[in-house]
Image (cartoon, rainbow, N blue to C red):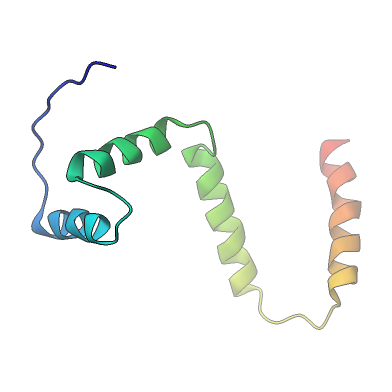
Length: 87
């Protein structure tokens, strides 16, 4: 596959992060790191909206406090709610 050469500007912090990725042994050079980041963004997966919905649900859960219900009780409630939302 032909390569296109690009020039980008990054912050010192971002440059340090790139160097740490190479030092970890996962990548051979900065271009490999950048190409991997681009591939991950191009891959099908959660949309930004889905990610925000997940974050909101996690935040709601953390703010709801401690529960004394058993895991089985929680799953049973979730199973009852699913048909109601999609029925």
